Length: 308
Image (cartoon, rainbow, N blue to C red; front, side, top):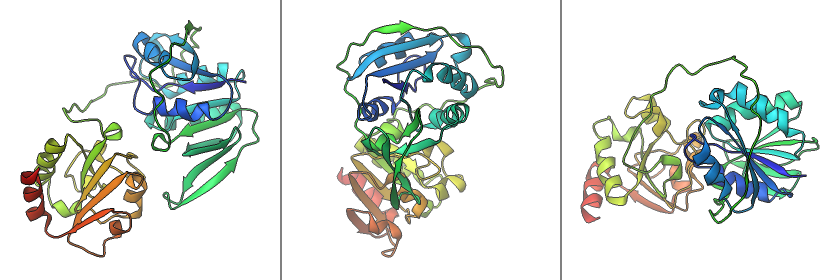
């Protein structure tokens, strides 16, 4: 049976993680169909059709899918899911919202945030804040699976799958979007950036985060933060990296003034190269850092930025 991937998108384009979910689905066997549910979502559907390995793109275009409300999306997915062996989605904010609803409505157990596929019914997922991995086998007729994007490469945009319109499901009217505030930045998006500079409570204030901004500008990097820095009000919540924030795996991760609590490490320890700048030589982040620079960050950061 084919595998159904639910595309994470903003109607115009696919969001980071959608192409990674397709790569994971390719390891589960069967043709890959991608469902794009939105309003005026032709751009996202076209992007999905170009992903390598995709055999067909299904498009449900209706006004009540514009905001990606989980109740409406879950109802649509359940209505088509019985033709598939797996339902797969990226474990982003959207996937974490509607996929548990899909699993509950199908009366199956969801397998969450997998990082590897061992066979069509066996998956590997992190537990204990990423300090251990569980191999999980599902005997459900339909496997409902969310994918941690950092565990899989993005599917290449080399395909040319046909796009097919399907009937939209009903508007459940259980919730509605009142408004949203979007953060705009000239820097790369945090979860998709190849370089990340992150700051912690050691920076001491929101004003001192400007030191990170100067370094990030030199590197073309995104800016992240520990939960302690976010809770202290230094930066907005969408900067947070960690178990309760964003999961990142860039080529380069520079952690400045971050002690390395287990919850933060869970969100960044898969980074290819980790550089830590901290005056505490006993900080837990030393256990995962490839390079360690012990000293006063207020002296080191200006010098490092100047050298770059």
